[in-house]
Structures are given as structure tokens and as C-alpha cells.
Image (tube, rainbow over all chains, first blue to last red; front, side, top):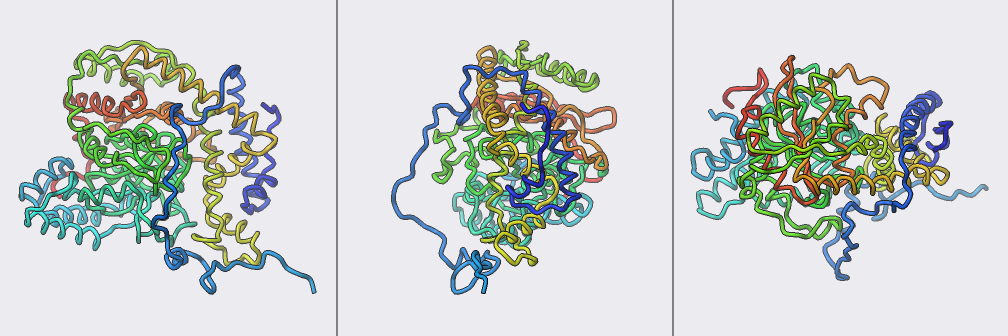
Length: 100
Length: 489
């Protein structure tokens, strides 16, 4: 485990897509440092020869659904919960902008 | 007027025609109206919906048509479980106005068996927390002491059954969120084996550990609900498609001769009054013919660290869907797509949810994933193996539920670790996917409830319920109602 805990909350907030103020970044930095320091406890455990757990049921195989059409949400049902819509589509600001 | 009965007795009275579904529902709606202002257990009460269902059931009964297993019985639903056409907030501002587009399988199963869905209950936001104080809609209070937490994250579901505002409720348990509040509020809370109950329609927190389960007044009622919840679902790939046992029959099978393992080493830091209470509880079990053997589960001391690595990693992935685009909150400040993500999530999520997403993001980031996540998954394999070895020596395991009784609401400070350490005795169960129950085991010197935790091997849910049922037949802790909430309905 890394000894120096530098969560770098500013970077994490970019990765997690959550805007934080500077004050919030500092507060979260402290909290995360505390928690990550506690996790150093796991350094005591030898994991040699152990495979990472995929599922608690070792015998569970990935079941596949039948490849058949079934009931799906209609467009109207889906759009009923959309914050903004236009012409039967989800409306968002332009992804690309062009300078004049 | 009617007394606050168990679901089983209410169901019998309804079928016999002694009580109508409308009378039952009106009585509980009246209690909710009278008492919930003190507790804040409910986020929504379905007055019209529940009375309409009750009237349908009364006509069904009078017409001699077959009635479902939960006919006439009101049940509250934790507000991270979807119900079509109703708001599901997950205790978050992000989903304040989100009307569910489909129902969770568990809700469909309950309605098919004629349960009366009476409302949605308060919770720690997105099921992340152990105190009920992380809800965007205010904390729920413990009916035994309104200055204390009822526990979490299924805070409202526990409080409403403890105060007899409803005979049953559903919660979800990812690291103890059914068992801990059950213990804090003096009721029975059951977490099924992972894969026993469909998670379709449960808003995901940590998908490899989440399970839906019942809160009830006793294990017999929990068994009744489990007969309904265990119904097969083709929409949850992690549900084990094996027919469930007849829970109500199984819980009445004999218990004498059952071997119960006690991990004394793991509990060596348990505070002396809690330990002495636990030992007294074991004496009661001994009189039932249960044999105790010591087992080694010292590996569980790594449980909290492991749990908060895996659960937060999964949560950071699961909550990525809340991006302000297709549903939920979209920030009015956003002028670009990036700002929709950044501002909506800034405004929509509370502090604890942000904390866990940031932690999970750190754990899964490319420079740390091997150190934390992969290592934790290997230790998870070790814990599963150790639990299996323990069950090679015993049939069930018993432990306390929590290190302490319900703590004061104003004790929840800025240090998240203090709250996380409350999960010491519960997280191991979720890490290994095991069934476990919390049953009331008495009260401390302040009159606050305490619980006994019984854990079983994977898919031995009925064995857990069986010991709980026998324990409750030999004690009366499960019948106690907090002062101010008792009496006739």
C-alpha cells in the first residue's frame, strides 16, 4: 500500500464528475486520508495463491437471456422522466462548439 | 379498535372476516398520521392507493376468491426500491421528483400476494450510511428514544415497524443496513443469502452485496414475507434459480442439537456490558438444546477495510448513471454537457454519498486499483473460505449485531470512520453472501434495545429463521413496544 496518503481530491472530483469548491476539496481530502490510513490494516494479509473473488457463488455461471424480443419502455414512457426533451429526443447543450 | 398484531395474526383475522382490509389499513394510516411527525419514518404515504387495494381485497374475500399469502397486510417499502408510478427518491435530492417507470420484482411479488403497499420509507441517501442522518429529507428518529438514531440505512423501515405504524416493511442490506437498525429498534430484521431475492428494481449501491429483506415483529412474520420475496425473477442474473424452501414449515422443525459457532477471538474488544449481555443471551439458547463451539473468525477484523474498498468502488460505478441527462436532477446552472454532469452531481448528492464516490474513484483509479481493489477481492476469497471452514464445524454462527446500542443523533460528527466501525459485526456476512438475522435479545441499563445476530451458510436461510423463531418462542423481547406508541390502533 502507498504510505503517503494523497487522495488528490481535485483530480478525483474531475474523474467522478462532481464539482467541488476548494473548501470542500480540503474537507474531503482529510476524510479520505483518514479512511485510507485505516485501510493500511490490509497490508497484514498475505494474498499469495488467492484469486480475486468474481462472485460469492463460485458455481454461478453467467446466465444468458433468450435472444427474443420482449416488452420495453416506449419512447413516451422514457421521456416522461427526462429533464429536457425536444422532438422526441433528450435535449442537452451542444457537445461541440465552433468558434466563428 | 384493534391491537398491533403480527402480520400472521392480522392475515388470519382478515381471512376469517373478523377484520376487513379497509379497517386494518385505516387503523395503520391513522397511526402513521398520529405518530410519524415525531419519527420522520415515511417519505410518502399511499393513502388512496392502499385504501383502494384494501377495498378490492374486501370484495375479493366476500366473493370467495383465492387470497394471496399477505392478503390484508400493510407493508412499507424502503425508498430505494422502485414502485411504478410512484416517486422513488433514494433519500436524495437527485431523485426528488423521479417517478419510477417500472416496479421492482419484490413489489410485484408482494402485490400479487395481496399485500397492501402503504408507503415509502426514509433512508440514508442511496443506502449509504448507518444512522439515518444522511437522508436529504431529515433524519428518522428512534421510537425508543427520539434523541437517538434508529440506525441505517433502512432507518424509516425499522422505525415504522418498531412503532407499529405498519406490521411489516422492506429494507435493503449491503453491510448491515437491515440488521443494525433492527437491533437498534428492538425488532426482527432479516438479510437473505445473496441471490435469494431478486435485486431487479432495487437502486444499486454495491451490486455484489445488496440484498432486500424484511423487517417484522418476529421471525415467523419474516418467514411469511420470505415465502413471497423468494419468487423467481428472470431479470436478475445474480438470483439463484433454485426453488425456495417452505419457510413457515421449516422454522418449526426442532432446534435441539444445532451446533452454533461463536468467534470469541473476533469479539475480544466488545465492551464488557455488551459481552455480558451476549453471554446471557447464549444461555437462553443453551436451554433450547443448542450446543456452542468456539470458532476462529479472526480474519473478520479486516472486514470493515475490505467492505469500504469494495462497496465504495461498486458505488462509484453504480452512481455514474446519475448524470443529469436522462432522469433526475439537472442543474439549472449548467450551460455545457460537462457542467450538466459536474453541477447536477454537486447539487444532487449529499456529503456522505460524495465521500464514498470519491473514495471508490480513488480505489478504482489506474494507479491504485491493484493495491486496493484487486487485493481486497483476494482477501474476499479468503474470508469466504474461512466462513466455509467455520461452517464445516457448526451449523450456524452467533454474534452481536453492533458494538453498541443506538447512539445519540448529535454524536454523528465529521469523522466518517467512527460510523463505519459500527459495521464491524455485520459486513462479513455481506462479503461472503450469507443469510443473517437480527432478533431482539433484551435491553441495556438505559432501556435501549439490543440484538442477537444469527448467521447461516449460503442458502441456509430457513435454518437461520428457525433458530430465531425458537429463540423468540422462549422469550418476549419481540413483543415490547416503545413507550408512547403502544395500545390499541
